[in-house]
Image (cartoon, rainbow, N blue to C red; front, side, top):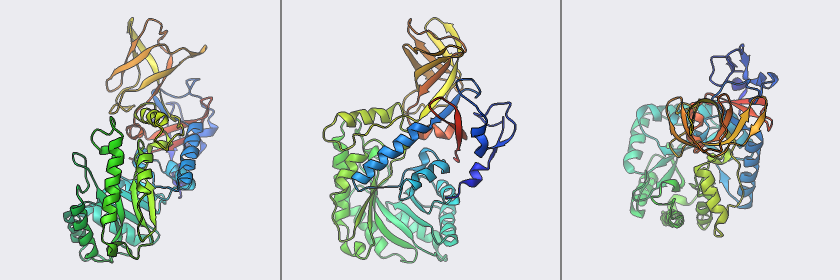
Length: 426
């Protein structure tokens, strides 16, 4: 990947997260500024990344993949940060996953050569964009989900009269009743398989089967439902016509979000076909982890003797803000809100308090119970010694809706020195 254009990007005080007094500078030079979050060099609120925790998460997840003979195409929608994509690919990722065609184009622009669109491709503008990208770059491989003959017909119609340098690689998506996209029955999968077999081979190539277990209703209360769903995916893959599989260099069986990937992987690895099977996880949030929904999922896996995932990830995202007001004895207002932090899968949780001139203090009992656009409401207990001007770090829940609120995130070391920066392209 070539991320040098990002490193050359010029930032200044107009950029959210950059000191207002900063004169224009290239991102590559941010480590020379001598900025430190605890010295109040950076404006708050601020979403930052802990370098040590990013490295830890990449290492332990990579070890898990190696030990279990798994491949990874991490979901890029989590960060939409090509700098992080580059680190993931350098660490052995097979490719990167996208959720939209726009994301595919961003990934390809910065040099990702293998992208899985974990979604349905359709629509004139989208199909034309993918066709143009395939024709412009002989090294680019593109995969997408297909869950109906109607969708396949839609792509074919928009490709009518267009020659492709290489075919679009299709993954039949398996869904679940009450869930999201994807076929619900083996019969539906076989109908799509028949349509793919009869389609123009210069434009379409069957590549395997895909699923996403995170939309299984009730999975958060009964992980057994994940294993049952994963088995249904394996059963459908095994039922596909042998003629569709013969001659494939490999059969891709892909699933695995960031909560139950081990349950999916363990079941997927039971599939035996005439072609080699690549079990491809698409976990994206592992790289930053969180202090909410994914932490809870990891804690559950840690105590379940049937789970193969036992490595502890560390939260790499922290949201820092000021104590802005103490208008009532048990109430504090923080200078961050919905514009700054995720709130769709749980509110942020304060876990550090730093008082300028004194150092870290006990955060006490504190709970964020509501967010406005720019304010966080915190319920305090009597033992919480919070003062206006204190700096508070909060852990977030759901990284996918954290990165999209920031064009720029500083990367810090354990002393909160700003050593680098990451840019996002949502």
